[in-house]
Length: 420
Image 1 (tube, rainbow, N blue to C red):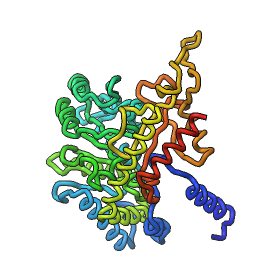
Image 2 (tube, helix red, strand yellow; image 1 turned 180 degrees about the vertical axis):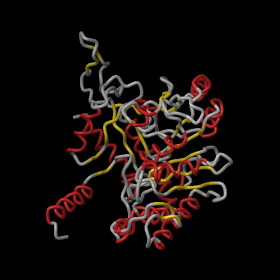
Image 3 (cartoon, helix red, strand yellow; image 1 turned 60 degrees about the vertical axis):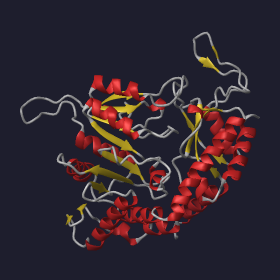
Image 4 (cartoon, helix red, strand yellow; image 1 turned 45 degrees about the vertical axis):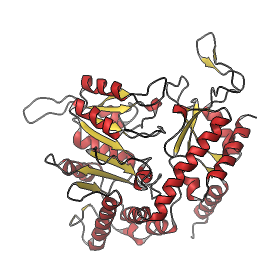
């Protein structure tokens, strides 16, 4: 590379990644083949439109790449192409979710053909502080500005989903779409019960499986496809691909997939990134192998061991553990070294002796080479910028070959760092 400044920075980041223990739940390490596709001459091609219907010439090869990616996505998740459609053009997860809502949820203030003005449709999504994602209708997101969010959360005792309560909310509010699949929820989601919630509201069932897509592909997490109308996912977390996204849509008389395709292009995006689509195709092929299934199984094993070892050392885990790659740890009040929280004269929570905020925990760990992210915990009283917990994930370090014995040592090291 002739640009020495950028080259040095890239090399510095490569070194940082090699030296660090990466417990970011939303990160992973792609193969050389994925990187080769991303850095290929495909970057040079403009390909607005879909395969066979481009607005530019010279796209015969790009069409074949996109069609191959589509075929591999359907096969990986064992989907019949007569029953499911997949759009492989979304640039990332947030635009993918926005495209679904743009296509399927009415926006307020829009004049209809009969002359009436529409009322904003409702998105029923988990609250951000309970484990939901920004793009599931949160106010700070465009999805919360264009549509009304009907928030739901967790049971305050079990810190897991209360499906009966969800059903009651859905029956009362009648949301257009019910979203499940979360960014900080460690337990298995009961897709059948979520379908019942959607049916109770006569709404659509949408699953955002971004965090668990690789686990679903690897057969270690229940598939949502038997129940959902729409499934979105990023491809760079447990699926171990490039930064991109997929939208799966069930084919039926409503032809929702046609509306979503139009929302992606020309609604929200111009030319797709052909290099990105090719890299996704490479990752999907890798994820269809027995080796990947073994990997996904090891990811969950490692997460369970890490959770058990931290709990043994007195750390409080949200919901008491994990069924996936993800662990949420309460660092503010762990029940062992911490004293009960107290409040100052203004009623603001103060730390008891030895308490650590999520931000402080993240910073301490990073100084010692362990990378995590600060994270709100359910019913968190602390601000998002300095919450009460940290989020951990085992996908990236499992890619590096770490197994149960390694995560026992990681848990020990984390405990020593955080209790200094």
